[in-house]
Image (tube, one colour):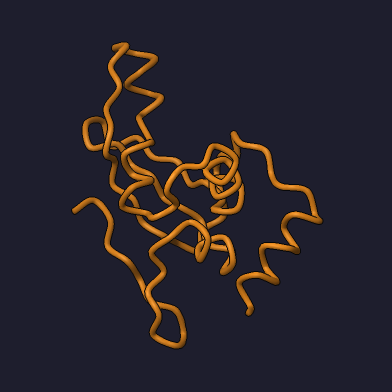
Length: 112
């Protein structure tokens, strides 16, 4: 399995992009082939998945990522990377963030 869920302070599993975004986590995505990695902010990745209607479970999200380094060197899409949630500062932010109104609505929805 490419993803192993961590737990929050109450013991609930952090196993979706929504919960990662709420807890302001980062996603460390590493290629299985060349071990190139990026640290992405979960909020912008969540928003991309939300806009496209994709499943936001982290096991399903792994299948959407591929290595940009392998793609640029060999024109090969190496999929299913190692994925880990972290508190590290993001090294890349290739996706747009939601506007403040949408973000606040999602946080309110999560609280209830």
